[in-house]
Length: 142
Image (tube, rainbow, N blue to C red; front, side, top):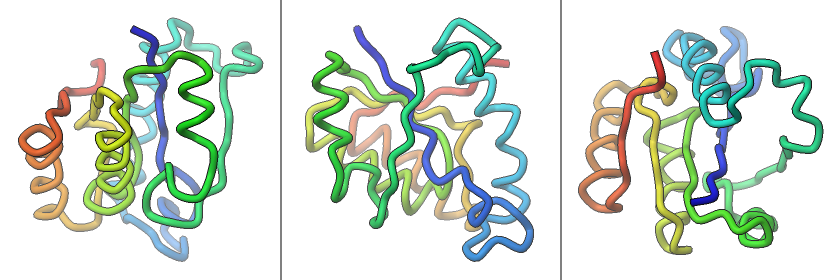
């Protein structure tokens, strides 16, 4: 099955202490788990050597699929499964997961590679991914 990894909102404004919409320390702790997930899915720990493998898409809504051609790009590449990482678990990751579900993608959420400023919201979203969306929720690769 062809897979794609979405790293959602892991940018300065969402993880830096002085970021405009910071997720806080929980977001800053994601660097290692996100990198390990990238390494696992690409089979290579040298990201800079993966020319053409990575695409950056601007987004203006909570969902990574809203208002852009992400779904079309994935379909053109035969992608059937999306792996989700990033911030915030209960906002942008959640809305991306719901849209992925509605678009018919299989969903894998890497629990150690998502975070939120709200621990209760984070826990609720992880349960929701599995129970309501049928997503696989797994730990990032140790």
